[in-house]
Image 1 (cartoon, rainbow, N blue to C red):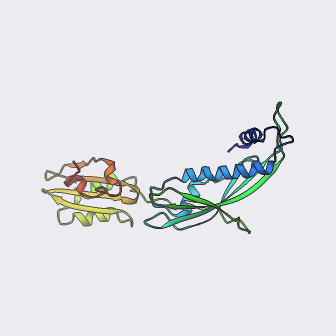
Image 2: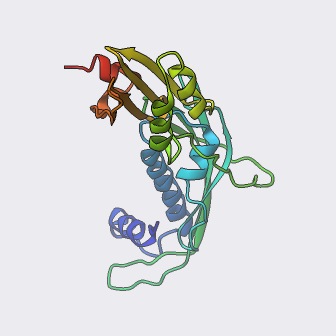
Image 3: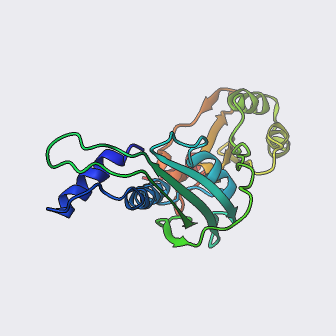
Length: 247
């Protein structure tokens, strides 16, 4: 994030008739503070259940920025955004400002400077992220956070469900579909409705859902639905998307 020029110009405007170069340490502190706010805006309102480590690994720049910019480093993470839980992430912002000679009349330039500031971010499901400055901890920087893959339906989910419905009988429907999707976290819902086999499989936390039917004459069909029905408080991923769709 290239902030030196913009912050220098702002400092000059505020300084009025002051003489001498702008203090680089002040510019660096401002740059670190501004970058911390930008990260808070990026975290924003949380709409998915995630571990703090996953958020730190996927939403904070993996590589430090160039000299003259701000180095952003996650320092600690705990908890998750699920239910009433809170994910907490501590981040260090280390800004380095190179010296700059005046470029034109009225431009004061600035001295070299640096500043390190740390902030704690608190993230909760369906709420805006909050943050506040904390004392930077001493010691060795921990290893970078890593992100475990998020559970979703497998790429061949359509083929799996098609094969399951094709081989199922009314008595075996639930077991056959569950056998096709044995992973923990994948929800399976089945029902016989007016002699039609109905199956819904999905990962509710990810709004990931597949609904399919097999009619009495053996025809297989994927059911379409309004995806807003997968949001919290709506129908959810289950067979009612076919048997009792919202009007």
